[in-house]
Image 1 (tube, rainbow, N blue to C red):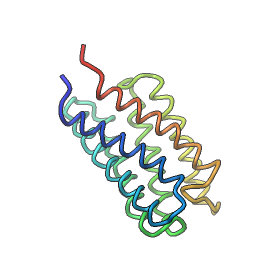
Image 2 (tube, helix red, strand yellow):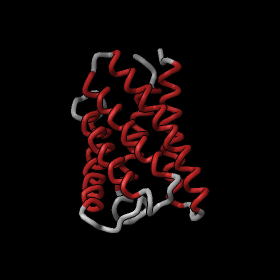
Image 3 (spheres, rainbow, N blue to C red):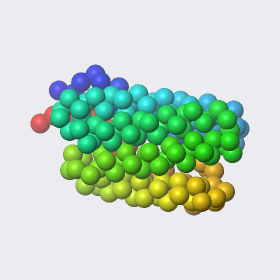
Image 4 (cartoon, rainbow, N blue to C red):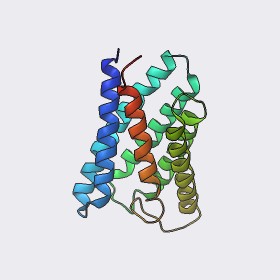
Length: 170
């Protein structure tokens, strides 16, 4: 039987994914910051609940991965109100933690292979993006091709996690 907390985590991931993608298309700074704040809060809530879920199940690596992802999302939230350019330092740190968290969550076979692969691709793209920023490349959170290429893979990973949380127990 699915728990209420699984449903709340799935809703948080769905809000995070939908508002995160929407924010990349918004041209108004204030609206983008608002949309991305909603996105970030949804993801933090979901990651906190997933940390607890997998820790209670004894899957410490996956739990630690979700906790690491939560820390990364918190950095993104902290820089969000500063605007695109001013948020770049916290963005670089946040996506580096996203990448580490995604690898930790996907290192074991807790999730289906396709979810793990989308997470690994996303992690690789965010790692490269973070390193490019640290080495002086003028990347913003909305820059293309990087880091923008990482977002669809992250969204697919979220969809997989949502599916895992909501599928009926057999």
